[in-house]
Image (cartoon, rainbow over all chains, first blue to last red; front, top):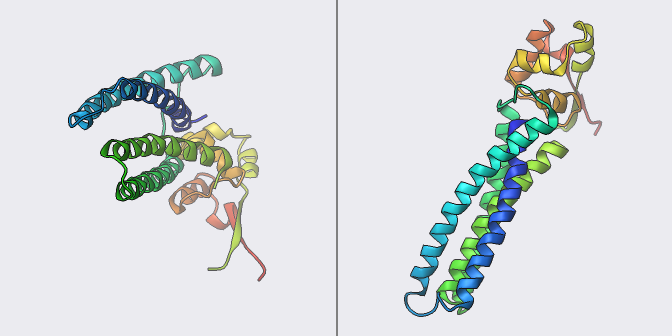
Amino acid sequence: MSFEERNAVSGILVSLITWVIMLTVLLRKSAAGQFEGTAGPQHWAQAVLWLILIGIALAIVMTIVFNIAYAVISGEKKPDFLSDERDTLIGLRGVQATLIVLSSGVVLAIIALAFGATVLTTLNIIFAACALSSFASEVTKLIYYRRGF
Amino acid sequence: MAKGKITNHIRRLRFDANEMTQKDLAEAVGVTRQTIMAIENAKYFPSLELAFQIALHFQKPLDQVFQFEQDPT
């Protein structure tokens, strides 16, 4: 497994864990009524900013842990951190998947708003699209690594 | 554009070059071992630059390493 392929696998795990944490925190806060009223979107944004920071930290830690675990399991004495043209090409396919999911989410949010959804629902749709796009990117990359072109 | 299939003789060329490993070839041309493996298994088609580098490494013309078989239409 190449360095970038390992990153794709750890990226999927990070996306799933982050997704569960974000959903749990946001649903709990929403049930407690913290996002209601005129200051609701502001509280939502503050919660999401913290969750993004936690997500970034988690991604860094998980990538390091995953690479150490891989080195131990595979017995590689000198881990390979090389990235080549195939990785670049597969990375671009990942970006393509990100853009498709993200733009679909934004369009969906606009449609929801047009049909009377609240600002908070619209923000949640955009945020969910962001999280899903990251997941879609990593899954796409892994598919290309495994299946080829 | 005419469709076809790109094949290569990298595996045989490696064998002829003192049973060179995929890792050795990968290091020689500056890519990962997985990329050489993907090229050999026709799961990835290299850039022209990498194709030339591989051919140069084996000191063969490009068409003796990579072939293009056009689909009969």
